[in-house]
Length: 494
Image (cartoon, rainbow, N blue to C red; front, top):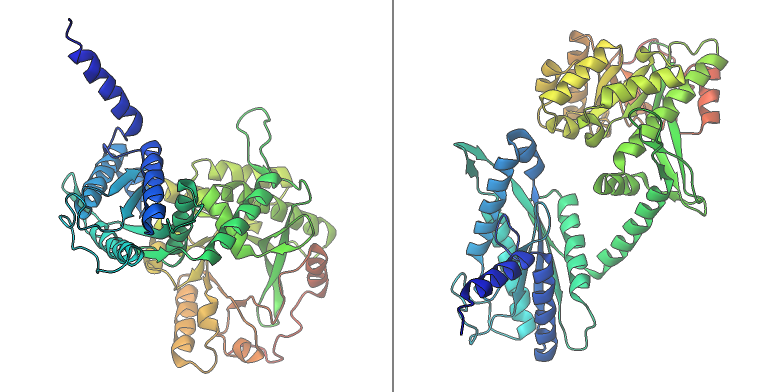
């Protein structure tokens, strides 16, 4: 006889470590999948549903980057504790990724151990009804609980969570644990797209959406190519397997006679059959998958190359500029300034002919290092424009903090012209502010002559009335024409 207690304890510790997250102590994906599979088997046998909640923290990266990984770890542990407090002993909450958590709820059972100890029992009825009521109830509680401030090192941090809710387990169902997790994940992404800090319930149509997003991701991935020259490689995007990335150019006009001032470069993706992929779809997929940076870099490269070619071909094109949108990932990358300057040098375009456009959403995520990068770019002569001006949260503060050279008035204000007095007042006020700060002002989304005539003097104009986003050939034609045909005959706009 010998004492094997230490061996048994060590084996238990190894098993626990293999199935649990070391930071929060919650089950990991392996244990979650096993438990969810068992729950689905029981639910199918009993005619019940299982509710699965996929939770992703909104704003975790901001806290982690600004305060360090130790603060991020404390936030994750606090999140785990709050989720535990909402659930019954028979429920499962697991950490499945950096800031992603999954909750599994089986139908409330009066005979289940500890039933109702953490929250009220669901409304009596069938197992399916009980499970669905329980899932929505817990989803609401999760969103509310994680919106409460978290105190870390004496500082309050406020984040939120996006939750996707999916059900499975009906008799005869062949849905696996991975299937249900995929559905809940898709619903979570819909919650994020709808504004975050909320929950969404999975619908069958979302499965089609997921398949389409997967197809678009494959198109983008087939087009991505990262070369390996000497030194630091720069991201590149090329045409491959029929998937094609092009750049469309929308003209910008201004001055008393509607003179062509430049173009905005806009990404366009087509699939193997030559069918266009909606920009809002492939841009969102690129952002979610991390492909937005190489995508943005290629648009920058193509735009700079094209404007350099136009300058070489047209004697009266030296004054033209090209504006390129920057994503948050591009803006926050420490090598941004070096990459932009390298593209300008490679394509032979003067720095003062390039404008980088930043949305207020990007600016809200900008830390001190990002702001320093913007100053470096501006000192090189590159323009910095705030796109969709007036639709965010802190426009005026960024006008003071950033080396901004231009603002673009959002099309949502233009749409109200000329009949909506509020929109008219906002457009005049922003244009006046830009003039007083010596900033270029461009009004976006001009689609009618009435809107054009209602604009304040001095503002540049961009919109379908004067020119839709077009091909290189269309851009060349605009340069040859030199001014907008739809520009009013009067000498100034009022």
